[in-house]
Length: 154
Image (tube, rainbow, N blue to C red; front, top):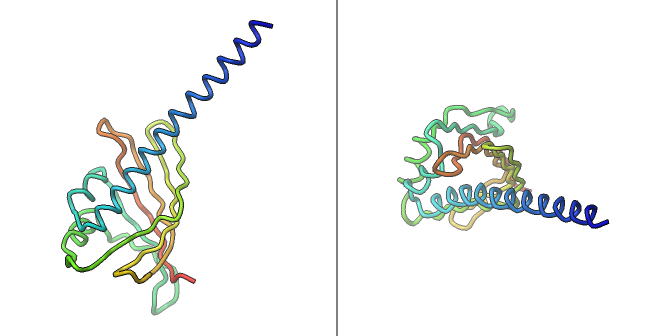
């Protein structure tokens, strides 16, 4: 009986430790994503760039206004994005509101599925989903890829 209770206690402690470690990593992944959006709000190119791995990629899926067809934009670069946000006028308020986080982890790889709404000067512009891929480097989690959808909000 004593051995069975000890075994159950050790199993419980092992599961608790594993869940706690995963919870800590999920929070670290979320913090990098929040850093990106805080940098966007502040037009802080240094803060934005620090969230990305140097080889990161960006892609967007949106509806083409002329053809009404879904299109994949592969022309966006991290350098172009960082430069664009960093050069926005100081009076332009940019806020991407994340509605929820669904984070999955496996070793040094994480994925985050984040529905969002984008506001410019307090007015909702569009909404969609940001799909992040992150890699854990010796300097912490870094975004290696973002794919997003953009659509008119209902």
